[in-house]
Length: 108
Image (cartoon, rainbow, N blue to C red; front, side, top):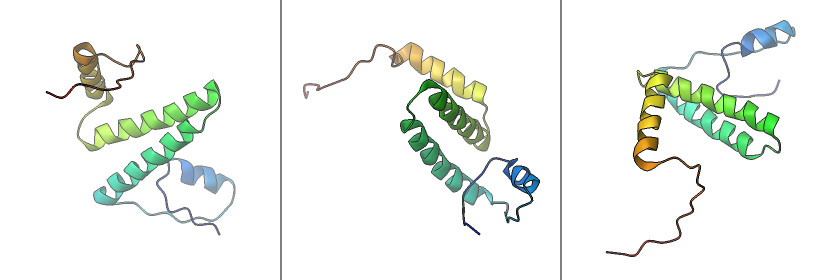
């Protein structure tokens, strides 16, 4: 039986159960959960980085967004609050639409 030892989406046990395969899970405590969620964010970002077309990219971006929702909830916030902060920062400092690459800044 392969070992996974990783955080999975809430309905994955049901999906596995529907195939008739045996499996084991456990519920993480908060410290374990946030540590595993951080690991999962790197895993999903690596999967996004490896995409080669729009459909794959959108699938992986959706996974990353799900993780951001979970992080926000963990911190007692919401995706709406995260979006408000993102919007404020974009208004103050801009986004990344202009593709500006900073090369150097003269020392004071």
